[in-house]
Length: 299
Length: 309
Image 1 (tube, each protein chain N blue to C red):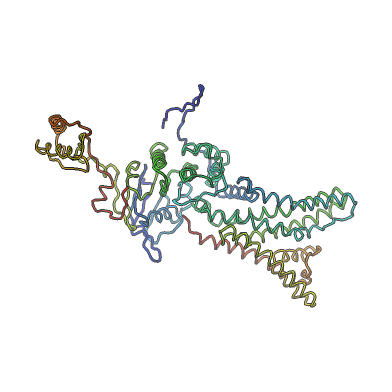
Image 2 (image 1 turned 180 degrees about the vertical axis):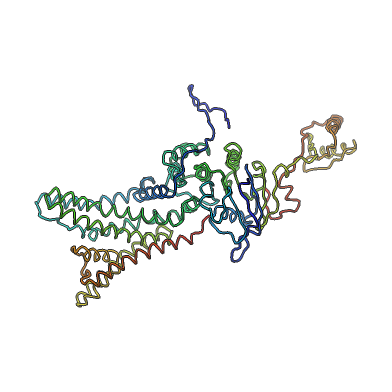
């Protein structure tokens, strides 16, 4: 192909060198999946998207970290001998921020491909359908995890700077980080599934908020009632029905950390139930997600 | 080796037969796939991409079996869907880079290819704007760019001219022609408009209700008919007088729209026409070979449901 050169003003000429075939490497499914993962993770924080998309996630990240910053400042000033807010309690205290984040960003990441039918373009490329689904969930989980773990990291740094017991702080941080990783996976799975089913963005946002906020409110109310009636087993079992109380109970049982709920699992049996329910919930969410995408008709 | 080959390919949906034992062999260059809406064009593309299983029969794309080697096919094929598929809040530049990476190109190569391809499809500065604000023409270009960015050996273009105004339509057709002839990428392009495909296709395949109606080289459709079209300056009455004079001069002539169609049996016919016009004092406006157009072929009753351009 040889189009006439286009003149671009004073003496400069752009020569159209025509179409050049690509002879370089073509990577396999692993690197492609990694690329999709990183793009998805960036997109969760609005990076690589329009300026407006960045506002909410970055604002939430700042709001999430801000209390930790204040707590650290106060701790250092008052020469406190321990963290003012224990690590495991932080996600529970800031749960509204976390909730808004997953409610807004799960549809932004997952409904978007279905609503704009971009999914067609992904399916018309070599990557398998199941890989696409798992990578999308991984991106969302990681995005939520970053939101949850960032303030904990700040608390850790503050704790070490304030001359608290370094190993004790590190251990508490790692335990809490493990717990928030599981919490992030559950929240991402739940919100991702809702977002994949209701592809209208507004409906998906509302549905995620309803599922998470209502479940927590109902659970904590029921726990209070049950506890006041001394129905301790019932109160503990009720905690299974909200992701926040479920993971809070799980970390209390596994690590023996301070619980944020009225009735964390007290017995080994109840602890095992919490563990099994968490595992089954995660498996069910991933399974439902894969099933949902099997029905997505390409093209 | 044919780029696409199908043998008694059948797709049966619960209530409709989308493809009915289709035999097909498509080679290099630009192949037009024509059919009314619902003729089975999109179903055929879905099967060729390995996204939907055929009910029976077999098909191969680039030598790979559609049933078992879908991933290899999708690595070597670019696909431009008919419908919208662009996220609104991403720029064309970022999106095409991302799609190149989804086809396995490393990041740096993906950036270079995306810049190249966006230039070829004619997206200039607007490539850095989010695609939500694009016109239909710009969206079609961005869709085409993502189908080309990984340098496929074959592109499947589903109704690329849909929704475009006449100028944008011409641009898009010229692009498709360039892809097939200058870029060296085989093209299967669908349309429900015959006239479009006549201009750019080397071959035309006509589908009707899931069956192949006809497949042949475009040249065969549009071969010279051995007829001359003649037009003289003046109104309808003058054309009629000219026509009558030609008949009187011993030529086989008949009206053809506002022109006169003359059987050009030998080269002397041209001289006779010139002399007749001269004798009558008419200005000769046109004397040209009359080519048939694809739609004339179909108008002869082959495909009642194909909509002519």
